[in-house]
Amino acid sequence: MQQHKLLKNIAFYALVIVIVVFAVFPFYYAIVTSFSTGSQLFQVNYWPKAFNWANYEAVLGGRNFPRSIMNSLFIAGCTVGFSLFLAVTASYALARVRFRGRGLLLMTILAVSMFPQIAVLAGLFELVRFLGIFNTPWAMILSYTIFTLPFTVWVLTTFMRDLPVEIEEAAIVDGASPWVIITQVFLPLLWPALVTTGLLAFIGAWNEFLFALTFTSSESQRTVPVAIAMLSGASAQEIPWGPIMAASVIVTVPLIVLVLIFQRKIVAGLTAGGVKG
Amino acid sequence: MARIELKNVKKSYGAVDVIKGVDLDIRKGEFMVFVGPSGSGKSTLLRLISGLEDITSGEMRFDDQLVNNLVPSDRGIAMVFQSYALYPHMKVYDNMAFGMKLAKAEKAEIDRRVREAAKMLQIDHLLDRLPKQLSGGQRQRVAIGRALVRDPRVFLFDEPLSNLDAGLRVATRLEIAKLHHSMEDTTMIYVTHDQVEAMTLADRIAVLRDGLLEQVGTPAELYERPNSLFVAGFIGSPKMNFLTGKFAEAKGCKTLGIRPEHINVVAEGQGEWSGEVLHAEDLGSDNFLFVEIGADEPLIVRQPGKLKIALGSQVSLQPRPEKLHRFDHNDAPIR
Image 1 (cartoon, rainbow over the protein chains, first blue to last red):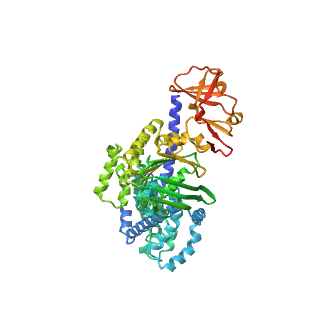
Image 2 (image 1 turned 90 degrees about the horizontal axis):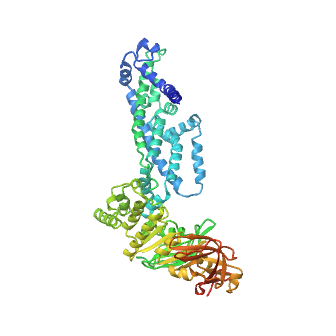
Image 3 (image 1 turned 135 degrees about the vertical axis):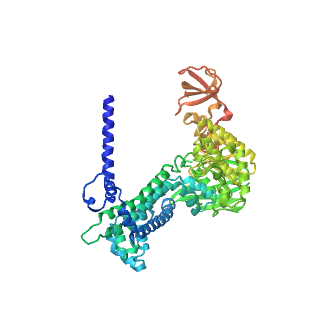
């Protein structure tokens, strides 16, 4: 009996280790590689031999990489802000206001998210040109917001629908306008949902490549993924693996930090036990 | 503080008529209870008065002021919901102060009113807590307190006790009755499906059925002089016995009603009806006998005190003639 249990435990943790290694190894190897230079790069090393910061210095010292990070931060931040604002107001209407064609509208929103990026690229390019925002951050903010909204609206609508109607009615009796209800009553209850959707929108915007490549032309407007792809070595034949890996590590860190911060927020979720107030 | 008049008030959702024309006059300072089975429209009627739903046609006046198109916050009402509906993220104090804050009242005034209400309901030691840290009874007090702070003309209760357990329910019922006595000017409207709550709390009861008022009157009136078979069956616990066929014909009516407490067990052969005791329930203070006298259902007889009657034995029963209720073919009373 005891042995059986032990065996089960071992099997369980073995499986956990396999999954963790599988998921984390690529990133780990990127870190190891980012600390190597020269011919070290082409030896297979599973442990870092030396901590050589040269690649990081090269990347951060480059003309445009810090600028790209700022671009990415600005674009992702704005995308999150815009999409959450639009999604919260839209989902309040979709979840709580009765109007004709509500179901159809919801399905349409969902349908939008089914288009592959490449299918709308040409049309979006025309739109961006028409609006005169080509090669500015707003081109990316616009297109990312378009692609994030369906998901955000759907998730928030579901959450909003689950909030008790009576709480809203109590607020109406207390004299609250729809705007007050959204901002002072619903938003605090929707925190976990907002954090989750906001985080996903941020990650999506941070990692996006195709639009960022298409809608920028000058180096100073590039976002991080494009900037990494465009890193070039001393000659056309040399791929600068070291700096690429260092850059990848640098741009992953903000995401990890964000997840760690907000994970605590989610865990401390305000609604725990409170919604059936 | 308000007199409420409803004139031919109707409410429909699409093709479905929920309230089919209600005329009702609720006096100033009255405790009015809406009672009826589920689907009778009693909650809808309350929501129409609150302004959470718009009336489809008809007129509604508070103190002679037409309020058909006034939003809830402009009607001077306060509402206590079945699920309490406290704001989960706000402390008790902020829950109670929210309405006044929105109305841009002065801070000192808000503070005074909140503390006064909290003291009245004995929740002043809970003001710093969140709703999730309170018990069900305490939450209901906070919900009542939140309504009190608004100093409403009309106090609306939507089945406020149905989420509480039995003991707490009685205690809170008493609490609400006390509240009513201490606020003589405030009109209160209370919705329940529990006729005991209705009988104990109400100045007057309005019995609803299928979106229409069946009868409005004091608890005693409804109990003693029900205006229809439906009201007779709805008010009183256990239910009034209804006899048809030869029992009713003997009294010259379609349906004969008699309350369980108005039937006496008499000596063998002395009673009008007799039959076998099928079942007996001893509640300590009362005995309920279920007697098969040949009618559609067993007759329920309520006898005070201890009674020694074996199951299966024959008993003779005599209804008190002045307490008989006779109903005609339209379920209307014959008097």
